[in-house]
Image: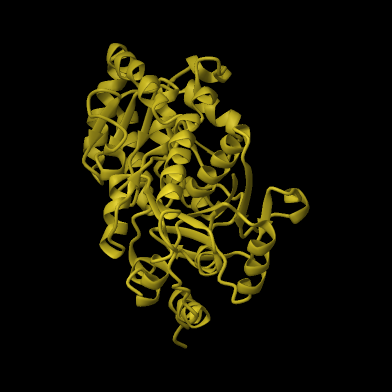
Length: 403
């Protein structure tokens, strides 16, 4: 097939949806399909100059879901999208976060083929309110098949757009985190707690830092590594807190390559994911499992969809630093417990390998195509998209400060 994978987010800026799209493209291409990625990008176009990527729109960062969504709000997408779809003649279009402005909505407006949508997130705040816009229901009628990456994502999407959803989770590159990965030289010096993620409030790092500071008052054979695509401002903020409180052996590593990320997992003793909410699925938990690493995580819905308490790790109450202290201390004190939890991870992670996930997606494509070809497609092409985008711009733009 000739397949379009549409993402609303800055490609290839690190993020769950962009990683998902990139891996599907790789697996589909390996299986002989002709695949294009349609997305906005802030990257140098020369670096992405290949026939597999089509750029649509510049990138605008906006606050969303306790994070920053790097999307395009261009009002000039329509003509280019229409021309591209006519030239490429896709057999199927797969839209990720289909109602996140503005590219997926524009593609959905002009598509004349089978449309599959994957819902990744459970939105909060301003973006969530946009899902109640009546115009989106008209676009929703053009979707032929729906995927959600987790029950949490399905519940959110189904509240606004009732229908039948296929649960197909995010995947991971299991082999990239396996036993063949060489640890770093510091592996044996101290027991290492690893955090991977941005330093946004919903990731809960402040609770882990508070717990780690208390643990360090009890023992000096532990260190904390902080890896992720966090901003320089967030890094400076937490480095200042660490320095002021004199918390020892905390290293803010920042962004690392995929190969080095695997080495950080393989070099650590415990993985901690203290997120407070807003996670539709726990990719970092799966990476830790594939690495054979025991886990301490908040017992939020997105994490409960991939990990079982007491089998691959331990759940604690969100926003509870004292609970983190107890769980981390138990694991630090018990090599046998760490080994047992870590040993259960790889088999669970294998269920989420990208080759497995990609085959499930392709099977769903075939099912939807067969269903669509048995009935005529409705003509429900909405027109007032520019008006909707203008309202969106007004909604997400910061209010002027009072003088």
